[in-house]
Each structure stands twice: as C-alpha cells, then as structure tokens.
Image 1: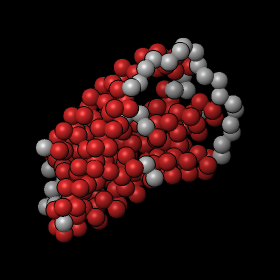
Image 2: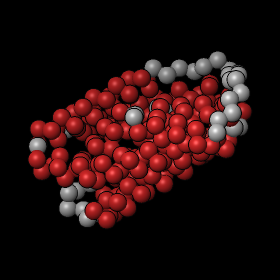
Image 3: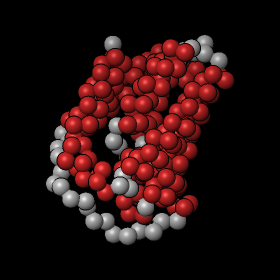
Image 4: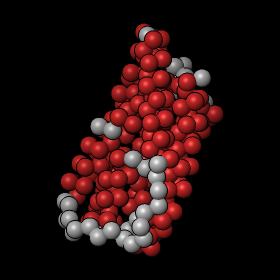
Length: 202
C-alpha cells in the first residue's frame, strides 16, 4: 500500500502543479485582493477536491465491477484530455515583462472560498483525473479507510500547494520571473501529461 500511496501522491503532485482553472482563480484573487484572499481561495479549492474524493471512493468499485467497457472509456477519455492539456501547455510562450495592473477588487472571505470551490468542483480536468488515478492506481482490495486516507492527503496537499501559490505570487518580483520564464515550467508539465496519457492508454 505504501507503493500505491507514493505513486498516487506523486501523480497528484504533478497534476496539481499543472496550471489550470484552480491556479488561475487563486492567482487572480491573489493579485487583485491580496494574500489573505488568495489563501482563502486555496482553501475553497481544497474543499472542492474533497467532493471529488467522496464520489470517487463510492463510485470506483461500481466502475470496476460492473462494466469493463465503461472503465476503458474513462481511461481513454482521461488520456485524451491529458493530451489536449499537454498540447495547450506546449503552446505556452514568454509574456512581456511587467506586472499586469489589475483593478482593485475586494472580495469577502466567503466569496473567495466559494470561487475556489466552484472552480474546482466543475473542473472536468479534476473529475477525469480523479477517476483515472483511482481506477488505475488504487486497488479495489485496498480498504476504504486507507482510500479515505489517500483522499484526505490529496485534500490537504492541494490546500497547501495553492496557499503556497498565493504566498509566492503576492511577491511582485516572482510574477516578473514567471511572465518571462514560466513557459519552460508549462512545457515540463506538458511532457509529464503526455507520459501519463501514454501509460493510461497502454
């Protein structure tokens, strides 16, 4: 089970680090309303992950036991979606230097958390990735309590990661660097997504 957990945690580490809707909303709120609002948005994203964990834990056994065809459809769909995201990542280019000037937007705490939550829950990338991860990595024989621990870890790590994003991008000098060099990071994430997609298809 340790190997299973390490594989799941590593895959999730790269997945959550890939810029997407969650990253965008945390970054936007951080730039517009400050570090505190960015952190609260990150907490909302983590709560959204909890929703994915719950329906995945209760749905994975049905997917595996009732329909091999459906299982394969989920994997193929997920692999194709990952390849599509990788294509977008490879298209990333350096931006012009200079911090973008956003209008001041004072969000309430609840609004920030709600934005993070909704963005994550309705993100198809997260839905497909969770189904693919759990159906491909986690064994049906793994006790539900252990799977619950896996899910709790993913929720906590997601919150911590996006809190870190909020903290880092509240520093203007870091934003300058990302605008010029962030496309290299995007390319690396794109390469990893291709690797995961190929593994799923095989």
